[in-house]
Image (cartoon, rainbow, N blue to C red; front, top):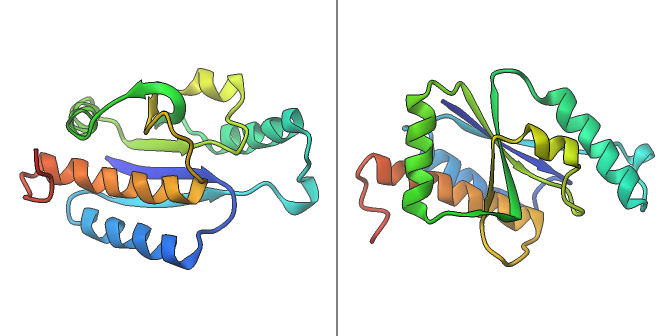
Length: 157
């Protein structure tokens, strides 16, 4: 199963990028993973929340393919611990999921149309984090999940 972390917004700061690539490198022997940045073109950027969500929706839905399993991250989503993340990944692999897309929405969340396409909605925490920090946290949790599935000593219960 391929894993793609889709995130709206600008490129990572160097310290975040180093961390993301560190965890991607550790995950790679077990599972392919990549970060896909989705950016609203500068000429289309606006302060209008509704219009921003609509522009982001268009970009996301245009990119979403039939073989993608969309998992949306949202503070109001289901709260899972690391063991449950690994169990969900195993279940998706067992079901033959080709590509898992973990979507980190925009600053104002995602539109109802994008939410409707999500097969699951998870929450990392009731706290709100900057998008770049979420990318790093998700990269680490994916690595942690695969270390659990492969009986690596990284995760301690």
